[in-house]
Image 1 (tube, rainbow, N blue to C red):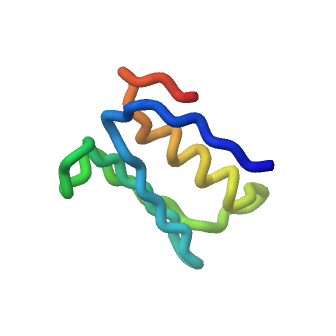
Image 2: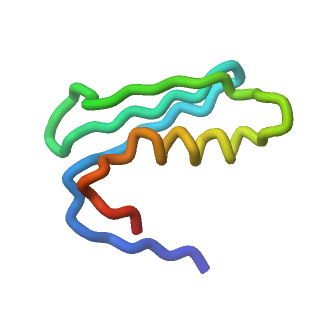
Length: 68
């Protein structure tokens, strides 16, 4: 059964998983301009795209917030 932990957030993360690149952006709540934007190739020898996506999210995640 799926579940979610909901809490007030000061940021939102948007991701785009495409065939050639993965993009992730960090948006402060209430804004349309990203604070951080990173992109990496989708494919890399020996690494699955999901692992690359998780690493990219961790790279842009704000250091002053805790990850649930």
